[in-house]
Image 1: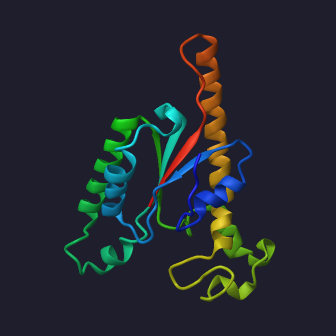
Image 2: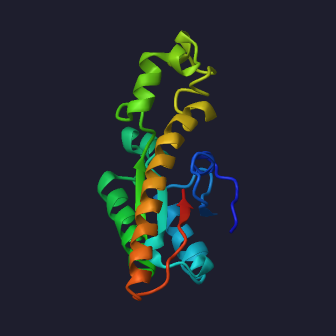
Length: 197
């Protein structure tokens, strides 16, 4: 039922590409890291009853992770962040969320520049995606705000594929719920997304 603005806008952009209605509960916080994710889980999400009475498996927790830790991990200048602590805290938090609500969890690590086929195609053939050739390496361009942050137009490329993934998951969930209802195992559930970070 409610949708709030996401700092990245990725979930909102994905939602516009999905024909099946999705309910998005957005707990994302600009600049949050794994500690922020833990706070979102513990203080904002878990204390409340299941949104809309949804069964856990009809929901997906979605976390865009690593982006705010990366500069610290690379520089190794901070005792606040090291890779082992980061990964341990991340998975402890996700385990708690899963154990409490039984929802599926999607983790996206950083911005998928080198391993996302649509982003790679856009960078290899920018004009085919309505970018300028020089946008590939230029900050303040159609692709990049600065050396780290991509534009909304680039987010839209990832959002289209994420939307297809969510649509596939939603259809599979609906089919499973319909089968359960036919066998009198329980009612069908509506799909939902919880966005963290």
